[in-house]
Length: 151
Image (cartoon, rainbow, N blue to C red; front, side):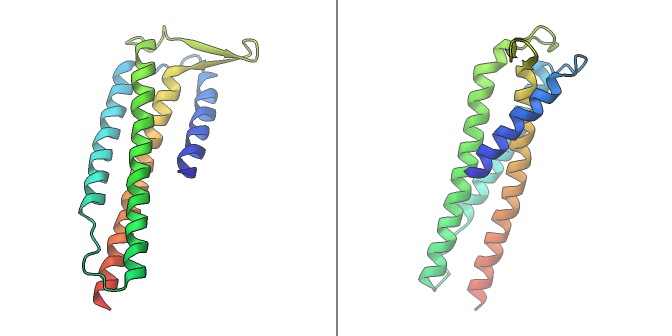
């Protein structure tokens, strides 16, 4: 969960930097596509955590450790996608179709203008990367289960 919070802060910082470029427009269609891809990645990840099982592992400590890791990964998937969904639902209505007439949030008395579309796009890309990294974690878990079964 700590990685998700750190990643979210990094997304905010990246979106602040992106907001400095006046010619960079991100429309609703881009945000919706990224959210759809994020949803697909979430579904795949959740199905991978559901099918991971430790029934054949005889060592109780190892079995409990693997289960704990599977639950951790599952919970992180849920948290990351929940945050993506909440951001999407709350902020998509503020973005026009072309991304130009959207709400800016002024920070430091207007010195920095923050575009909502940049935050949404950055977080959606982050969630996709995060899900991919967790796919690799699940694969490692499944390999460790297989190794324990072969002992």
